[in-house]
Image 1 (spheres, helix red, strand yellow):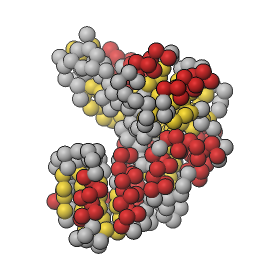
Image 2 (spheres, helix red, strand yellow; image 1 turned 90 degrees about the vertical axis):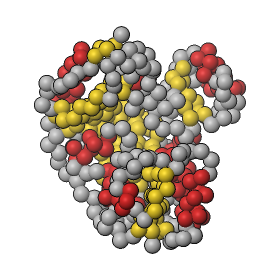
Image 3 (tube, one colour; image 1 turned 30 degrees about the vertical axis):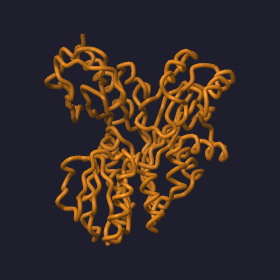
Length: 394
């Protein structure tokens, strides 16, 4: 009996987390030197997980030599193919119907509308006239995004039709969607639900706009006090959203929600996987739970109860300074604040950079802490001012 793991990130340490699962681990990965790779019964490294059908063809061939009880993806890009493998091999876990509902943003929002959950007006694009008709009905700005995108990549906020014409000058509209731009602060709720219904919900907020990295703006997230009225509303909307989508027995989730100036909550989207970037680290520092580990263990049937601190005494934030179309002249060599728990310098002085394409394209990232919402936000403001003075571009 074996577990098939699909690995794209060294953060997802299947071998460490599942060492007590009592089954052999088999691994397909696109990462050289995946953590503890010698603890796996079988490892196959692929050059590209997204080129053709190699992952599926290899997995089905491996299934001829062992019995897989679970198939464990962690990346958004592998959720549907993992579900397809489960259904083909008769393995329990998230179905294709459920995976598609979380992966296809148009399908997702159709489910949510039927459940009376407010989302921005949207449309799947089939041709150029779909854009013209949508923009005639809804005023600019509008948002263009891949139907199955993630990590805020390849998103366009267009303020006029000419921007859309330029965007689609050399590509077709198939595989894209359009939606009305929502002006508001963005929050996100992250967590895990196990097969027995045990659940953990972590309300968080984005720092600045979630797309500010595109204009070289500081980007990040922070954990927020779960007992506040807004946090409770965010969690309740997330629960309602999960209930509106095709059920799956185990769920890791990352929901993004707009909070408008009129105090309305509008669901942006939800994914059936745990959050990327540094969100997992922030949640672990605040609530003491590793959501990635808990999700993977739950998917493998190797966890009884989620363990976390329901009354945190520290809250955490991540700050990222994205690359920009400039030359980087100076970076800090130390940090003067004891509430900065980690600072990572990924940029190179003298290096020439281009505009960020995703929020992980940064030259500096840090994790900072505070005893409550108020102190954390004060630390965020202080650190950003310090960072802007100590990272110099030309």
